[in-house]
Length: 216
Ligand code: ZN
Image (cartoon, rainbow, N blue to C red):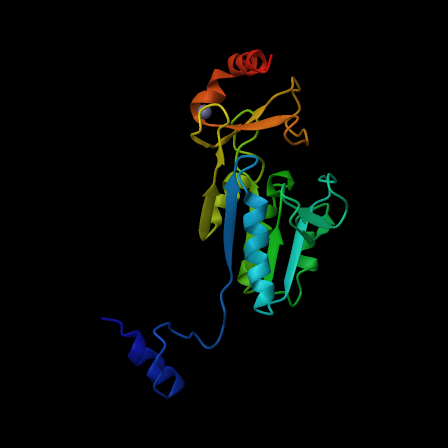
């Protein structure tokens, strides 16, 4: 049986109280994904983790796709206006150029990035970087969104966060589009989308009519 304690002792030539094996000081990076529907708190959770890293004096860089200009050029903003400064980039390959000497890389709105995002996140992790990525797992049609399914497949840790369905109070996993618009990417907030559970999502605009009726 492999004994971590004995291993640490022989490797460092001294007795160690740590149970974790030390492979010659080389730190391994990893990928964390925070996913869910709109209004599920993905960005809040990303910001929370990044702020904890900053408190620990780790060097943190945050990136978002150039497409998302809803809140200004340099801020990652959650819907409750909690924000941290970020760098907009056009292609995920820029992550590699802009992450020299960084301990933690945050990526927001990952669903809008190119299909090379999973590969580039893995390259960052191989450099020993902790990569934290937040994004929508499904688009408004309920289909896997952009590079997210491949990213989920290659990540070490996945956190699926949920909104609350305003129609029934169950956990919401889907982003229902309230306006008639066919484009996959339609930026917007509560005026254009609402979170729904699976059942209410599939009831579609029947629920819209009821809502409008009850509001008079
Ligand atoms: Zn519901």
